[in-house]
Length: 386
Length: 136
Image (cartoon, rainbow over the protein chains, first blue to last red):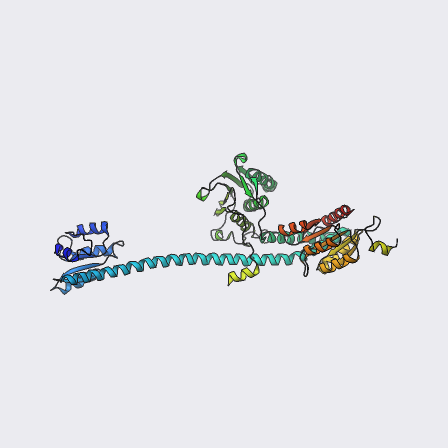
């Protein structure tokens, strides 16, 4: 029988003949044929068993199986189909019939493979589309926030300036009435606070990052720690520097931007940490992805930590868990914006009650002049949203 | 020399220093006028760059302070117009935007200095004093 089938299908097909179900399984696994033709009546493992096993194996189940049934037995054919055979051929059969059935099975298999490939392609495209959509929503949200912030802060600037200057003028008059003085000083203080907020907003919506220059990371960190130390000491927080300043590389960055980016993180750490707590600042030269030379800066605190549900939002502008008036929600977004503009990465890990770790990596030299469309022109924004 | 001559003529050591304040915000003009007058300056105000250039054409000043963002011609072009009429006039530009570009362009156009809003009155006073001295 095997020899007959082989002679019928030769020379259009490359044929492997096996004598038992076990041999067949081994050969199928090894060769991955396009079509399987199997008798039903076989010793040890019969055709049903073979088909059942094939259809149970995910990697083999797509190969079409044509079972050869006895002409008298309709049940054989039906059962063969029931266990998963794709077609049957009653014996005896004419050569043309076998060729036709095998040819049909082959076509079916090809179509099946095409469908699978297309499905995978579609799934991949869908995934990319979904990611792109998420990014688009995020970036248009950010762009809208940026435009809003820029406009609002500019409009706020004048009135705040006028309030503050008016209070200053009255203070210069030097009233002797302590009530008047106190009141004026309060106006001055709080208008100054508004001015500070406006300044933070303007800095956030700033269109162009400034000129990058070479600066020693060790020097910058040392200076920042000096800057932060009086405040942390007063709050009873230990500020620990864990780096060898002279061993740290120089970075090409806009130094004031780097300083505010790091100060934002140190400030958050200080706000999250209570008396007796500790803030560690680690830094080392470290290669990033693709072996780009750079530096890693890690700021770890033993503070209250960030709740898991809040963690995904820490880089969103205006998101803050600080008390009203204590945080603008712009610190980490600004830090992230700075880091990304310089081709670096930033990650925040946190555990409630255990503390927070902010890990930043910056390349020694930004990959290209850091210019981000921080605040798109209104016309461009409209196009992007449309 | 009569008082009228002094006001219309060139800077005079004995005369009060003359400040030209340019801002589209009425209240800002008032504050700066009150402030500089109380500090012993003669003040003229202009609510636009065009008006400032007009005033400068008919009189002379020891120092000008202009807002950057105004309807009509902005602070930069006001600065350029004023310095065309009087190349030695020190002009202080008050910027609302924390934009380095704007500041650089103003400095390139010959601004005496740029300061950012909200302006601290003491800082402004020192700056105006320095500008008047620089002109002398």
